[in-house]
Image (cartoon, rainbow, N blue to C red; front, side, top):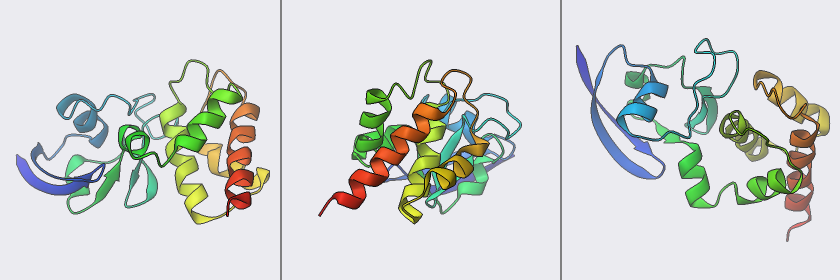
Length: 157
């Protein structure tokens, strides 16, 4: 059974016919070819598949594509293209906060939501990232990079 969904993806209006049982992560990766959304555990534990849905960081492996009917979706591709996360990406590179990069798109989605809500402390950054697994960096560099962006954004006129 299929349903027609209408949504906004990375700033562009979209319409698609999707199987009612198709996971959003698979729809993004296989149908729309947006492979920046990574699939790790497929159980909602690792955060590699996090994207923004209506401004909130969500696990795309736990959502069905039909659930985004009427929603605004931002993937790592859209966040990058818009320049919305350029400062985050720059600090991640400067602080070696990514190594293999598999978790990075999900971490950046989580950080984007967090930074749009508040100017978080280190503890709040750590708390927000508690649902994102990274096997390479040990998190210190990730927290440092996000904290640096917080400080730069606060200092900006």
